[in-house]
Length: 84
Image 1: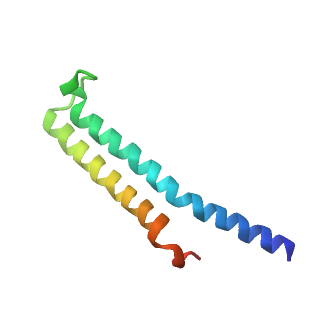
Image 2: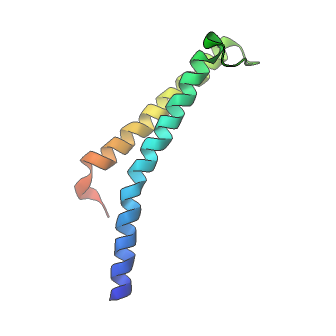
């Protein structure tokens, strides 16, 4: 009985941290996407790829980052009753 309670409490802690991981990964992807957009313009770096390819890559990173942030916020604040 005690081991079952320990496992369920560990699972609740793990479930609580998952949305935070989504948010953190989303922020990193968003920042990398913004870096791809603005690094050359701000003199922070030089890429061997064409600006069009960097803009496409930056757009993909930003969109994926926003998706991750959306999922994290949704899980953290709106899906309280659907935890397994």
